[in-house]
Amino acid sequence: MEKTVLMEEMTWQEIKKAVKDGKDTAILVAASIEQHGPHLPTATDTIIGYALGQAVAKNMGNALVAPVIRPALSRHHIDFPGTITLRMKTFVKVLEEYCQSLRHHGFKNVVLFVSHGGNSDALNAFIPSIAKKIAPDMRLLVVYPVEKNVKSLQELLAERGITRQRAGVHAGFSETSVMLTLRPDLVAMDKARPGLIDEEFYQPENIERSKISSFIHGVKSQSENGVLGDPTGSSAELGKVIFERKVNDIVEEIKNNLTA
Image (cartoon, rainbow, N blue to C red; front, side, top):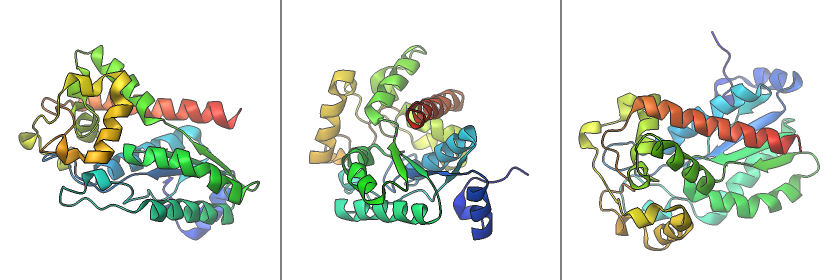
């Protein structure tokens, strides 16, 4: 039986020994509990976050996965039942105390990334100040810029005939395909329907503007069913390819930065 890399599945003795034996890096993923259309569960980002964390940790070889943070920053989805959101100051405090706890237990590095795009700007804005509080005992590294990854996945899917607007950025073809790979039992494809499929919204040069519009006006104003994209015809086969691309991108960025 393969040993787990999830700290919450380990005893304190196992964690202590793992750190002593060289597992000096903690993976910390910021996810969410929020609506994902009529066909995906509210835990979608959390499920994907755990899967990414485990895959990255196993690839690195010297890492354990801290409990995934959720709920987090999901105010733009609050008009949909089931969405749970934190205030910014609460989220930042949780980040800080997570990192302080991990430092206390001997981890030398914390690698942070998001499986929910709404957390990305907060990590980039506040991790530097948190890093100053715990330096020089621990190094914090934020990886996996969401906009960069969205563009990368759009290019990947375009090669397979999937348009940007169909791939989407929330509960569309891309995310639904990943969930069909990870937890097909939680995907109700018979309820999958297109949401916002305006081509302009998904153009690479418009991604940042579109995101800000979501934050200001809420996703409900953009898509009645909460879907940004078109999940119909989603594919577990392509979901595996998308997931592996995400993992490879994260691992590559970690290696480039931790060895810099």
